[in-house]
Length: 284
Picture 1 (cartoon, rainbow, N blue to C red):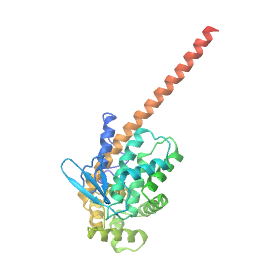
Picture 2 (tube, one colour; picture 1 turned 135 degrees about the vertical axis):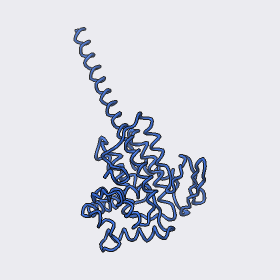
Picture 3 (cartoon, rainbow, N blue to C red; picture 1 turned 90 degrees about the horizontal axis):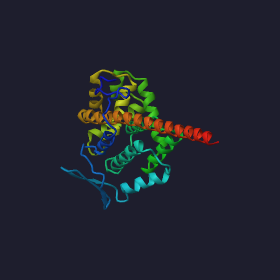
Picture 4 (cartoon, helix red, strand yellow; picture 1 turned 90 degrees about the vertical axis):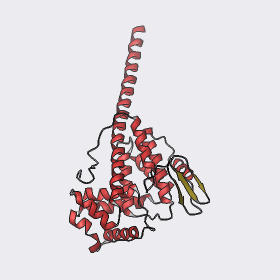
């Protein structure tokens, strides 16, 4: 799959230090048009205002839309256990980005978006100490956004099963075919063509890539054809997949550093216990 946008979940580059992990997670706070968002913003009269050093953008929301602070608080209330910082830093950035996407007027849930988020979440939380806690975090995260975590999982699984049965050709020929998933993709293409009723995001880009990966569509032109069929700008997809790849590569190193730290601390504790036992034996 490396031939598609030179990206593969299993082929991740290395980074030089753990500090770059935090820097990379900040990149996820871009909006769907590629503007860098600050971590502070306000919601006035139903609109969330986000700014960058060179641009200013207002995301108009429904008048009763919760603020980003509300969404983050809902998550913390739903999942009260501590989360290791290597995971929590990225989760907090993701929930900010997804809140801004969710409460845009043009937002409409779709299974490709769900597949993209589930893929990002599962990659991020891979190696988490507890499977039960990992799923509880997923539930709390999605519910904090007033959406259905079960629907995310079910739709993602349906798309994965469909993609596994596809070829490079059939994947991009969905407009001429009938079926549940084909209908979903046609609906996305129609809304994307109308511009005002479709909200592109990085989660959507990752969902597209996951379809290609599962279909074994390794030809470099397939992503371009799929984007054209869906009326999506391939340049945006390429850019966002690069950001995602870089984030994952840095998370891999951060998790390795965390494992090494835990192992060192465990060894130190064992050595202290052994030394204490030896001292007690001498004094007897």
